Length: 181
Image (cartoon, rainbow, N blue to C red; front, side, top):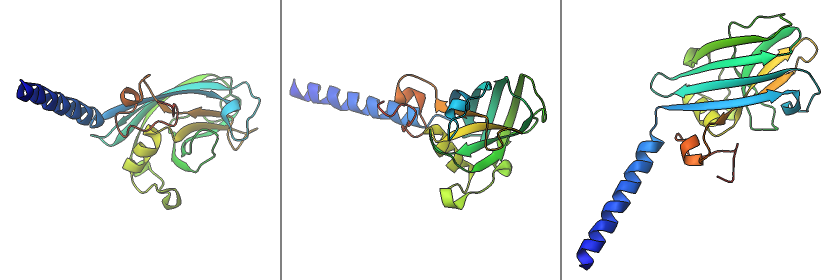
């Protein structure tokens, strides 16, 4: 009887370990964020607001994003930066296809590959896998810049989707967006 009980325990442990491993080996991760000038460093009182969804894909080594931006005046640039909430960080990649000098609401979709990456050795960003690690743990943000706020007018902190940290971030199981999980 003890032998059967021990066997069941071993089998249960093996199943639990394999499901964690399979979960950790997911090939995609979806990040979401919404933002405004309040998330800029330092915070700004502006009318601009935005939302974004990005999908990191380890298989194709790409990041595909869609952003919706509202109430922005004189758009001059957009980028993804490495840096956690409340921390300003360097530009990693520019957002292509923006309606520059626009003063209106807009939606834009794009895909980044490794060739779009600006290397940042001082921050440990030497390849796209480093961007995946930073973003999947909540350490990157999108920033839209304007003529009035060249340092950034709307900041969107990108965070893994999901309530459960293990579900929300199957890449590295780290989530600074919800550190208590």
